[in-house]
Length: 270
Length: 251
Image (cartoon, rainbow over all chains, first blue to last red; front, side, top):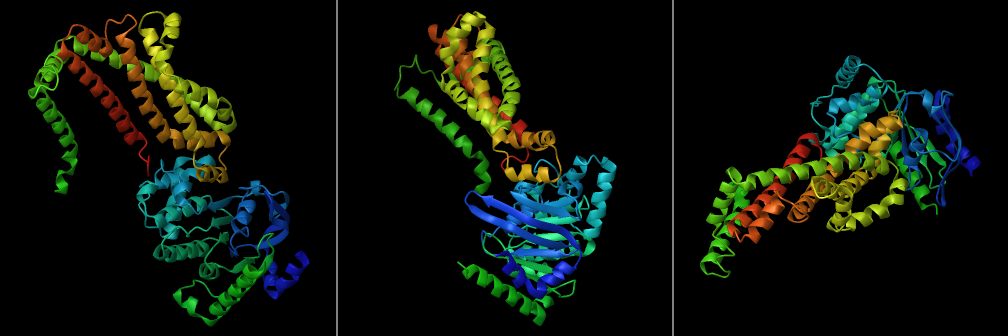
């Protein structure tokens, strides 16, 4: 299986591999009760790029970032960041369910400062870093409010800021916009693109929306049904900043069609 | 019309008093057993201002507050400790549920033997009953802390102790207040019952019982209403404290 998958990657994956790898995953295995989700899985995530993970339901998209971010432990295999283990690096993680991920007893600004507090950074410095982040991202939210006083999109933006405030070298987002309405989703895509352009963070995004996955990504990682293989690792070359016009460009449409075709092929495969 | 909505609860009160007047006038009950509302409220007023009712009221407040405070001091830390490990809680759950289901009044004779006839018995039986209710709620509050929130703290590098203090404890607060409100209500029930019997000389329970024995019906109703007001007031006070300090509750 693995060799066929490797052969199937073709030139597309070569370009992902050619970029300097930030995360290297080797021989990853994970079983849940009676299902093998990952069996001897290898992957390189290039540095400073935005990777979207897309695939059939239950193929293990979220499981993959949870394994990389250490939320769940692999049964076997190795995940290294520039050769270092997770404990040696700073990373951020954004949950799908912002309502349950933020701390409702803290004001939004204190939520954002919380990871800095864990790192034992002095209050004045914490405040300074949040202000810097606010200015850099052009955030227009009253951060003195409690999360439950904000809209869904604003809450998720607070979550993203909380993940970014530690200046992570890698940011994981697990379907961050799927609980938002469409209007807010479009706005948040632009916010995330801005985050990506303003920082040199490697971003790994799990998405259930193909257009979003392609629109935001430098590389779309298409997974097969479990045990997951790399069905394709598609580069998206559209220039940044991308906009609504990007969606209509021939290149973009072709890339999206290609991803859809691979996805359909994987869905149909019994 | 919607502007009048805040006054809707008044309708029930007015209705009840009207019904009471009607019942007295058409003599459904012996007038000696059911005095006029005005007589009752007059008895309540004079009793609270200069009479024995005021002192009894304060005694009951003291006992109920003391019982709830003792119960909280024991049950909240213990509930956090037990709730922090679901397996630990499961191992003592049956014992807690069993004694929670045991009528605390059945424990009077035992506590009388242990603590003698006095305040200590009344307070400790009430504290016993309230503690189990609070314990159970705190433990569940801790066990039902949102997994995502705990994970969020974990990915930010918080230690287990830090997660307990910064996340789990705060997560359990709304449920803790549910326990406190149930606990204080139960403590009041037990205190009032205890005041009726076992050699009591004061307290609202004693007041109700004594008025009934002396056939002073307005005084008896006055004491019953005072007990009702106390129960309602204690609950309301806790609710206000909760709204102030657990502002995120239910949001």
